[in-house]
Length: 289
Image (cartoon, rainbow, N blue to C red; front, side, top):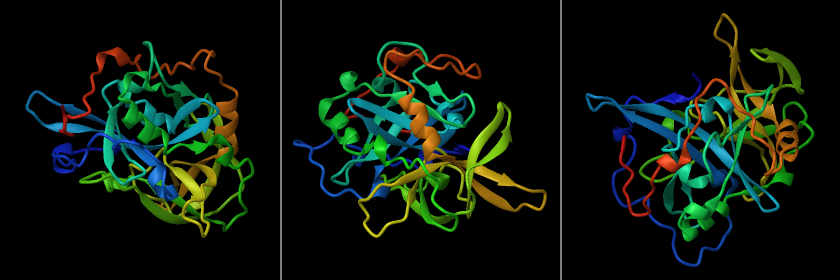
């Protein structure tokens, strides 16, 4: 599985006051594009008290009044109502929110693309403390920042996320890894038929799936998203190429959906029940809780 298998969350997630409520009067100073990426963590504790789980990356897009969380489908599948979304606010403070608190109603909150490793969830902040939700919303990028044409081969890009859970604790700080576009948009065989892929190199570590790939620009605040990292392809000798979902495909998927549309059900996973989750703005980030 491309999402990280967490051997022991307790050794990675800081237990203390670093994950706090957002400060009063949230404003948006200059945010480096790399800090707009968030982390999704699902942790479990077995009968013997051992911790395990999964983690992946994600990012937020704004389409008029819609706030949309985007990630890889294989990342979305491991999440539950109790999964945690970790993020760094515009002031550099780290926070987390229970994923179930960001949805309204019951049932499956994710929509899945039928021919791509892509999922999206429309967020509802009515059940979250307003200042904290404002801090999260400040990280969203306009939907128009998704490029509808693939940059030419050799274009420098940055794949951003949380490889090997680095950048999660003690404070949230996403990693940015330099790469280059290696191909035009190509059809690649998948279990659902074919999917459109952009190849890049080099490959990055597990845990980055669902993170955006930005076009490298001189300004650290510019956010031109050419695609989303979703894994790698390899041959029998172990050579690997990174696989990206094209920005064009992401934009088309999101624009074809409206809040009134029925959500695309993924038969590979059970329904999520958001109302089962509880959240506390003052709780510490404790593994397996």
